[in-house]
Length: 209
Ligand SMILES: Nc1ncnc2c1ncn2[C@@H]1O[C@H](COP(=O)(O)OP(=O)(O)OP(=O)(O)O)[C@@H](O)[C@H]1O
Ligand SMILES: [Mg+2]
Image (tube, rainbow, N blue to C red; front, top):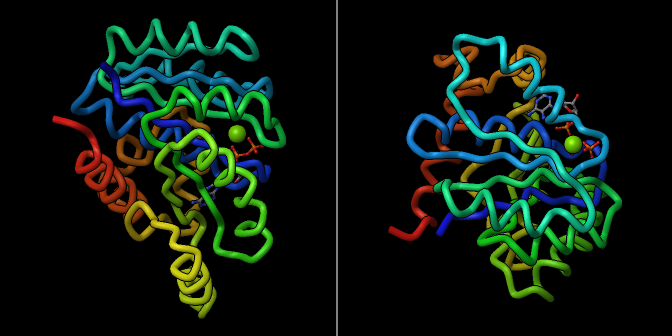
């Protein structure tokens, strides 16, 4: 049975699609990976189209469906892949619930700022009501400043765990995305790639077997 990761966060622009694409590309080095874009905005579909023309892109399965078709697609992809990653839409509680219900793990990208933390509460509540393990992935963490520590303390006080140290605010993520690649493929020696690989190592530790 596949390990299913729902990348969810009600707040728009938190980095759901960036996180999903980069984890998928990095995990595809070691696993049979499927990506399901459940967001009608189709951000990842555009990424996948660009990816098709890239020699550096590791093979992965891509599908885009939304609404009532999502559970059946997840079931089908889970049959012949090790990992299924779900990108979800912002502000879509019903759709997020479907993805979260199917997930082994809910990953919540969050920028280290108050409004983002507060907006995460809706997604955390959904994960809680579906009894799913949820981890925060701090994203666009500024290189300097006290914000990260402040948010770290807030997460601790709410007993929220993170998936490793998080990802910095780096143009490399946007550059790779526009090429249909993950940063581990576009610039394997970059700090961004190191950050993604640290998250991948943390994910591997959570996967059964
Ligand atoms: N770590 C990062 N460093 C720099 N830019 C980033 C990073 N993560 C995301 N971005 C940029 O932030 C913007 C929003 O990211 P993304 O589309 O992944 O968010 P999203 O949560 O999927 O948005 P939506 O809610 O609209 O689906 C994009 O322009 C992306 O390139
Ligand atoms: Mg998105």
